[in-house]
Length: 391
Image 1 (cartoon, rainbow, N blue to C red):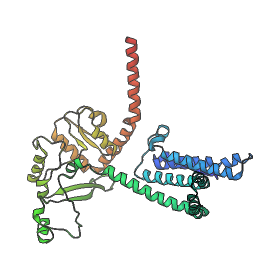
Image 2: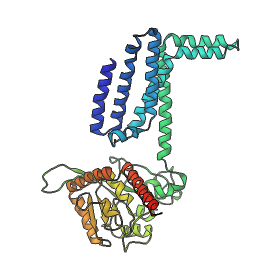
Image 3: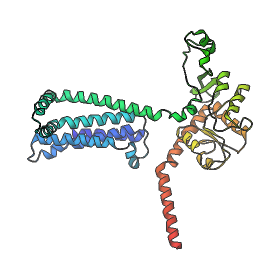
Image 4: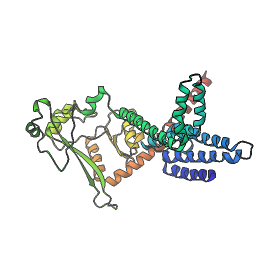
C-alpha cells in the first residue's frame, strides 16, 4: 500500500505541475510522504522491534510529517517546479489536513498522554480518580473520540479562518469614507420588484423620515455580452457597465485618481461633468494615461489579471506593455488616440482577450519576484567587484 500511495502521489504531482496549481502539488507531496512512511513497518519488521511499537512509530511519523508539511508556506515548491497558482481553497485544504494530522497523532498516542497526565496528577489524590473516570469512556472507543475531536477542531479552525479573512478584507475605520464614497447605507433591490422613486418610497413609509437622510441616490450594474461582428469565433464575451442617477452623481464622494484635461481639477468636477453630459464615462485603473511614470505598477497588476492595458509611452510603461501584443501604447497627451484604443478593445473582445492572456504570460515570465531579486543581487555583486578593483 505504501508503494501504491507514493506512486499515486507522483501521478498527482505531475498533474499539479502541468496545471500549475498549489493544491494538487501539495496533496501530491503529502501522498508521497505518507507512502514512504507506510514502508517503515516493512523495514522495522525485519528487526526485533515489537509490532505495536512499529505501528506507533509509523503512524506517529505520518502525523508529525503531515502537520509539518502543511504548515509550510504555499510557495515552498516554486523554487523546484516553478510558479504555481493558488486561491482561497488553500486555506481550507491545508486547514483540514493539519487538523487531521494533529488528531491522528494525538489519538494514536492517547495512552502515552494519559500516562503523562496520571503521573503529573499523582500527587493530588482526589483529582486522580476523577481524571481516570473522565477519560476511561473516550479511550474505550478511540475512533469515535477521534472523529468528535476532529469535528470540534474543524469548527474552531473554520471560525478562526473566517474571522481572519473578514478582518483582512474589511476596511479600516479611517478609510471607510474613501471606500464607500461617503454613503452609509447600501441596499439591493430585486429586479422583479423595482422601486421607481426611492425618495417617494421613503416618504410613503411611516417608519422612515426623509429628514434622516442627507442624500439618497442609486446606481445599477448592467452585465451584458458582446461579440465582434464578422469574427471567426462567435463566442460571447461579458462586459459590465454601471449607470448612476442624478442624485447619486450629485452627492457621491468617490475619488478619481486620474482626471483628463478639461474635467478637473477635483473629483467633484468630474461627477458634475457626468451629470451634464451622459455620454461621458469613468474608466477603471487598467487605462493608465500617465504623463510621468517611473515604472507602472498598476499596469503590471492589471496585466497579471489578464487585462489588456492602454497606456502612454512614458517612463517604464513601454517595458511593461508591448504595443499590440499585451496592450496598446499611445503618445503622451494624445487623448483622441487613447479614446480610440479603448474603443478598439471594447469593440474587439477577441483581440482584447488575446492581449490579456499574453500580458499575463509575460508578467509571470519576466516580472516575477525571484528573477528580479536574483538580477538585483547579481548587479550589486558586480558593482561591488568593480568598486573593489578600482580601489
